[in-house]
Length: 80
Image 1 (tube, rainbow, N blue to C red):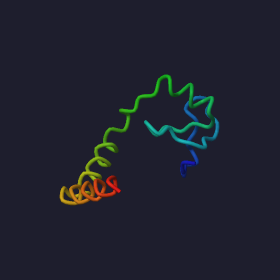
Image 2 (cartoon, helix red, strand yellow):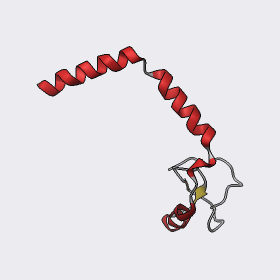
Image 3 (cartoon, rainbow, N blue to C red):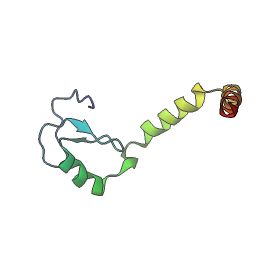
Image 4 (tube, helix red, strand yellow):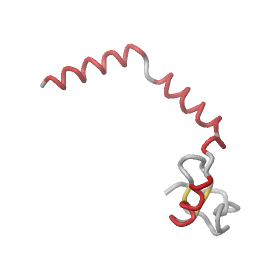
């Protein structure tokens, strides 16, 4: 369950107290029914800055040499 700390947050569909957030655009919703309605009009590009930050962090955390080492280990394990 997603953490919704803001007490003013409401479901984008029915305006009830939300329990979850859309994984694509992070807007709050309260139920599967509301999520399905929201998903029809969901725009994942509403938070592009967050995606850029995540991709930048991911790209910097794994070094190219580590990728080669991991690939060699995986190849060795696949041969067994």
